[in-house]
Length: 182
Figure 1 (cartoon, rainbow, N blue to C red):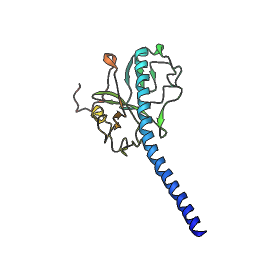
Figure 2 (figure 1 turned 60 degrees about the horizontal axis):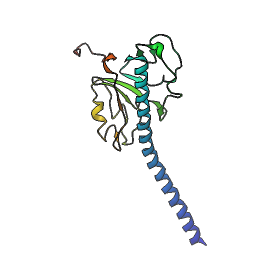
Figure 3 (figure 1 turned 120 degrees about the vertical axis):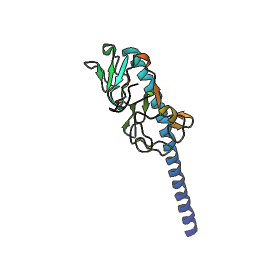
Figure 4 (figure 1 turned 30 degrees about the vertical axis):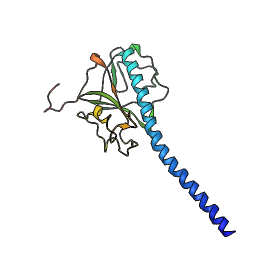
């Protein structure tokens, strides 16, 4: 009787351990897939907004994406985004603003353009943390990071996207006094 109980208890512990390992692995894998999926959707939404309204620029170097569910607004700015034709806004563009781990995605301004990335403090599947291990400043080469598995590449899928705003964009780099204008 004792031996049967020990075997049964051992089997239960083994199954629970396997379930825990499987859950942890899937959570990591699912987070990468969720980020890649959300980034693709956000890129499409911003390209649609640019087509509809003409995105001029964004207010800050890092801009949280928490305004795509806005139906109407006054002025030429919605959230941190400045528009050429705000009257052509077709919002809300999304019912809910996507988040990962309850953290908003962001539009990052660099010398090489605007990029959609996970927000600061998001832990990527490679265990790197945005804002701590992966720094997005104005000099960040996010395009290069998107090809690096130790940065923003997960299973051959980038976890960021470049926003192609064409010639109507007036990218602001928040130059220091010592910086040269581009």
